Image 1 (cartoon, rainbow, N blue to C red):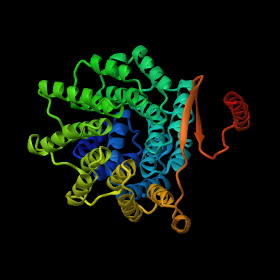
Image 2: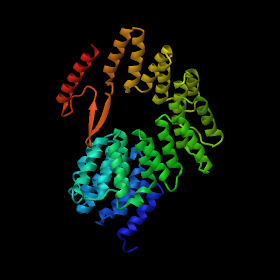
Image 3: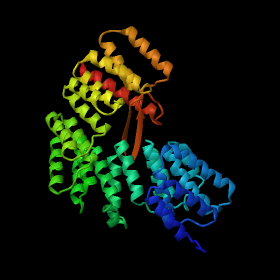
Image 4: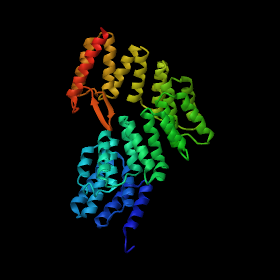
Length: 436
C-alpha cells in the first residue's frame, strides 16, 4: 500500500492483538509512531490490549524498546504521550507504580490528558494493592472534569472500593452510572456488572449484590460465578448451591471459576458432604480438571471441619506440589482442632516452602508458646531477623464523611494520631469507671 494511514495501522495492530501476537502488535505500534503518525483512541486500546497479554519476562524488554524509541526519534508531543501511556501501563503491570506515576505526570497537563492514561494509572494503583492512591487519582480526575470515566475506569474504582471495603463510594459509583449519559452501555457491560456484584458482596451488602444480579438482562456464567462467590464469602453456602442449581436449569455450563466459588461456599459454611460431591462431580461429570486453587479450597474445607488426616492425604497425593496456601489451610485446621504436633510439623514445612512469609513463623511460634518452649521461640525470632522476615502489620480502613482513613498497626502516620490517642485515653478511663 503506497499510503498507509492511521486506520490501516490500527487495523493491523488490532488483528495481531486479537490473535495474542502481542510482541508483533507492539512492534507495529512503534513503527507507526516513528513515522510521526498520531495514534487514535482505537489504536491505543488495541496496543494496551496487546500489553495485557505480555508475560512478565517480556515486560522489561518492551519497556527498554519504548525508552529507546523515545530517545532515538523525535516523536512529537502526541507520540510521546502515546508511548508514555503504554509505559505507565507496563510499569504498573511490572509492579513499579512509582515509576508509572512519574511517567504519568509527564503526559500533557491535567486538563489535556485523555482518559486512557488516567485509566492506566488508576488501574496500576489498584492492581498493585494501592487502592487509596487509585481512589485519590480518580477524585482528582473528576474534580478537574477533564474527561468522562468509562466502564474501564469504573471497574478499577469498584475494585479499589472492594480492597478497602468502601461501600459508600461503591454506592456512589453505582448511582453515578445510573445517571450517566452512558447509562445503557455501562449497566449492560458484563465486566462492570460483575465488579458491582463483587464489590457489594465483599463490602457485606449481599442484598444490593443480589439486586444487581437480578436486574441483569442476560445472566451468563461470569455473572453467576460472581454471585456464587459473593454468597460464599458471606457464609451463605446453601444459597450458593441453590444458585448453582438455577444455573444448571438454564443450561449454562459451569467453568473452573464456578467450582472454585462452590468449594469456597462449602468451606465457609462447613458443608463437608456437599463439598466432596462437588469436587468429585467437577471432573467426573463436567470434565473440568481441578487446578491447584481447587485443591487448596477443598483441603481448606476438610481441615476446617476436622478431617485433618484426609486433608493431608489429598495434599500429598494431588498432581501438584503443595504451595503456601495448601499448607496454610492445613495449618489453620490443625490449630483450630488442637492438633498441635501436626501443626508444628506443617508450620516447619510452610517456613521452608515460603521462607519470606511471616505466617508460618508466627503459627510455629504460637505452637511453641503453648508448650512453653521459650528457647525455640527465641531461635525462631532470630532466624526471622537473619532472613529479614517482617510480620505484616494489620491494616484497616474507615470511611468518614466521604474520606477513607487508613490505619496500620503500630503506626503513628495518621495526621490526627495525637487526637485519636487522646480520645482512646478518655474511653479507657470511662471503661475502668464502668467496671468498678
